[in-house]
Amino acid sequence: MKNKIGINTFLFASPFTNKEVSLFSNFKSWGFDGVELAIEDPAHINPEFVREQLDTHGLTCTSVCAAMGPGRDLRGADDEQASALRYLEGIIEIMPILGCPILVGPLYSVVGRTAAETAADKKIQQKLVAGNLRKLAEFAQSRQVLISIEPLNRYETDFINTADQAVSMVKAVDHPALKIHLDTFHMNIEEKNLGAAIELCGGMLGHVHACGSDRGTPGKDHTNWGEIM
Image 1 (cartoon, rainbow, N blue to C red):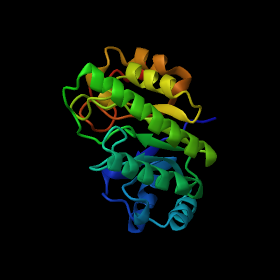
Image 2 (image 1 turned 90 degrees about the horizontal axis):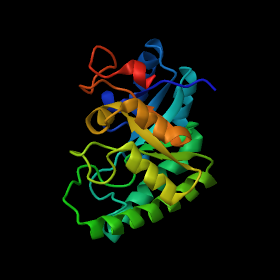
Image 3 (image 1 turned 90 degrees about the vertical axis):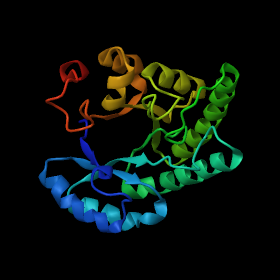
Image 4 (image 1 turned 120 degrees about the horizontal axis):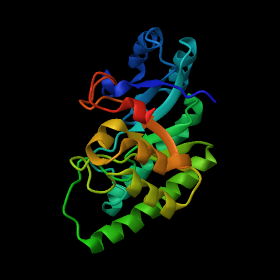
């Protein structure tokens, strides 16, 4: 199967709504196979209309990127966990309509939560997240799609920063619908060796964000793209 290259709508609009389908003609002309939709709220779009526009422009929805904003936290308070699950399940519900195979991002926690957690608290949070991710993976499997967790750099989360930590979580959840999503920007900060991190994930790797060390376009930066490829 040919790997598909998509472009993330966060680069151009926040939030993504029905009117942003006007971007699709540019994406196609630039040579992309598809679009990674950054859906901040499923209510922001009509999935049937967006799918129609994707089809019209010869594009696919390669993935949906989750926005784990305030109040969405699978290791947070009960209401934060419930809010995160509602949001993520709401996206999963519309993914088959969009023709989207995978939901990606730091699904496990709100972005920006960084603290010096005790070992005991970390253990509790790991168990909590694993349980919530398993619920989410089961829900995704029932809709015949996948979910994929993304390690972020230490300035954006204190929970999963490396491929090794992501692998440990996926093994703890032990569900075929859960994969790993690597981002070369975060890897550039956290990994000792980017190629080895990719190899470590192996068949658990479900998605990759490719961007330069400066968060810009790949190439002409100090990232070792040959090693990554």
